[in-house]
Amino acid sequence: MKEEILKIKEDSLVSIKKCQDLKTLNDLKVRYLGKKGELTTVLRGMGKLIPEERPIMGSLVNQVRDELNAKLEEKEKELKNAELLKKLETENIDVTEPSKKVNLGSFHPITQIISEVEEIFLGMGYEIADGPEVEKAIYNFDKLNTPPDHPARDVQDTFYITDDIILRSQTSPVQARVMESKKPPIKIICPGTVYRSDSVDSTHSPVFHQVEGLVIDKNISMTDLKGTLEMFAKKCLGENTKIRFRPHHFPFTEPSAEADVSCFVCGGKGCRVCKQEGWIELLGCGMVHPNVLRNCGIDPEEYSGFAFGFGVERIAMAKFGIEDMRLLFENDIRFLKQF
Image (cartoon, rainbow, N blue to C red; front, side, top):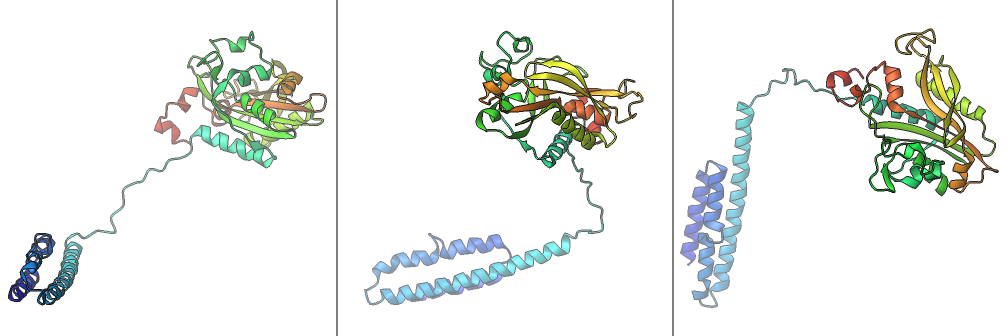
């Protein structure tokens, strides 16, 4: 058996030395050291030896196996290095050749406006609040002083999932949830996606974005509201921007107003962007209705507040001179590259 083991060693070492590629080397490893290899076969015959010879032959087999493994590893490194050198010689790369052009994306106009608005209000001490887009009707309507017979709850105006679950038609439900869960003072903005059953045209979409704001504290007045909106308008649209209020009606505020800003393109003289009026309608606002405070567990005798809300698309269209809202949703790369 000793002669057989040494013969296997001699043959394998010669074969390993002559080997020219990794596949052949792997085949040799299987041939001599595999489960059915020649050295393993010899080990299976150990049972035929007398007890005194078994440890001697076992030690010899282990010695030969270790030596073969070492030679195989050495040869493998040699072949891999040779293969790498061959690749380096044949696969030259011209580092002076211009690379392929990489097209960099940018933030969508809607995202740009939301980020800018958030930065402005964070700088004014506001917090950003969020809530579900699939909302309970009680938060979207009832708590905001909009009873079941109000026209805004008509199926033509709102997407109903069930009688009590809807796709929120405004981000105001977030305000109701915050007022319900947090004691004044409250100072938040609520950016997000909203849904209304509108036909798609140049100024309407069934899916759009809103930012609403809410301040609740003691002795809050209309003066605070106007000062806040003036600050926002100047930061967002330019330092020379002016603001004016027009009386309006919203069920969740009293008194209510529509806020216009002077056209930041023509400075109020009249142009294409403001349709020659000198003013651009910006948002709705007002003092929080006492019923809304009561519905959310806040005493209107102790606290007052103001709220405002605007469509992000309207700001984007005014600021960037976009005449058709559909351009903001069609994802035409040629359009988006402008921003």
